[in-house]
Length: 341
Image (cartoon, rainbow, N blue to C red; front, side, top):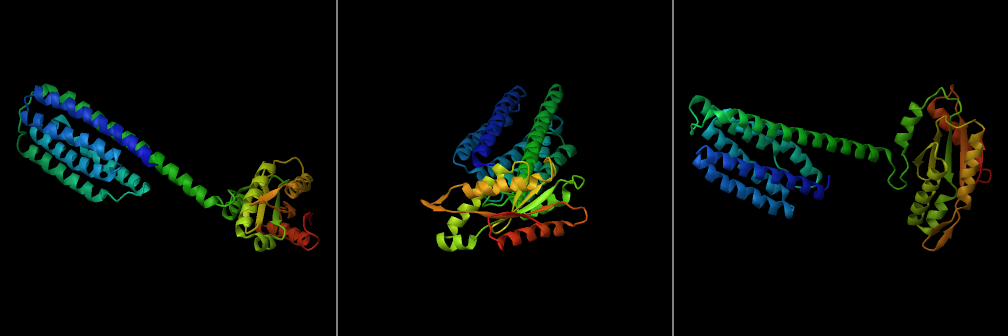
């Protein structure tokens, strides 16, 4: 949710309410409810002022102003006409909508609206005005032939707002969950999956596929690169190398395992076990032949890879440890190679 979209939605809602105000003003005139006709004039002005508040992005002021006046409007029309016309139904949409609005305000970094307090105030106003009408009589004795039409119109308006804001709220929640999930599973620097996500995939992957394998890749002499060219250069290499891995190993899950280490999981949709070494050799060669240029300085980058086929007798930790042993062996025997023990 961004401010531009919030402004657009608020503008549309404000316009719909303003049209309803003018329509109701005509109805009040037909019913000879003189006070409500005059009361509609400041009501319309409130929503005209709303356009200005929306344009200067003071949505929190707009919401407070509209809610105060809408509560007053609901009480006034109910006291004047009675609750058979359904104006009191608007509190049904006002309460859930204010909570949605507060959620949106929080997402946009706006001040809190105080949804709980506003809801209590609306509930008290609802009880007082409907209670008065129930104990006494409405101020105006309006022809009841209009009752059904207005009850249906107001009910449809209320339910339309409830459906719209509820669906919008669900959409916002889903988007937030997806963003949180991405933040929890994606390494910010490289854009690769992180260690937490990879551990989940290792546990969830189909163990019936015997041609699965894992590979641990480590950048050779990475500390020396950082010491020589700086940590910004190191970050550049990590990011660029991650892009090469994703492009080369499209049929596997690639993660940043930690520091300059990467873990790759081939979930069993490759043709044969023997392809594991071939694919990793292709990745190693591609990285070794790629140009890494940081601030007009060319940096030679190679990786060493340890490879381990899946063995049902091994736990996930032991499986990774086996690949790590291959990596350790390669690091101590020349680097820039693929090792499968």
